[in-house]
Length: 147
Image (cartoon, rainbow, N blue to C red; front, side):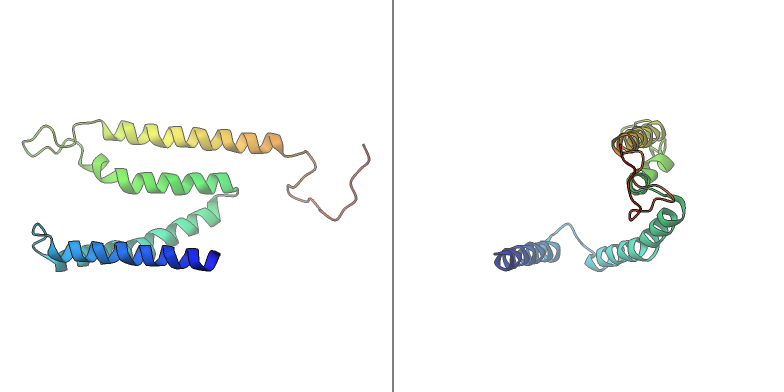
């Protein structure tokens, strides 16, 4: 059952990819397709060659628990998406409708809200775990004390 489902998903993905390539090559608004491909390739190299290794290195060296690592991934993604707006806020070039919002404040609010949520999740996980279960120096093979 899983084999034919994977085949259907693969065919669907290939069909969507083909449709996207067809649309890309035949779109009248794309006048320089080579520039678009260079831009996309640069994004791929930047993501896989810099961003992912940096995120893994920071996560492995700084973050101890899975909740903090997860929040760091979320914070990195929010920063990658929001940082251009934060850095260019106020540059309207004569059009006041371009970047009109307080992006620095909003970015910090999103980081604070997601950080607070991660803290709540970490606290809930800590409360659910029994006192002698896990933690440094815990030996799962040691006999449990009688209650």
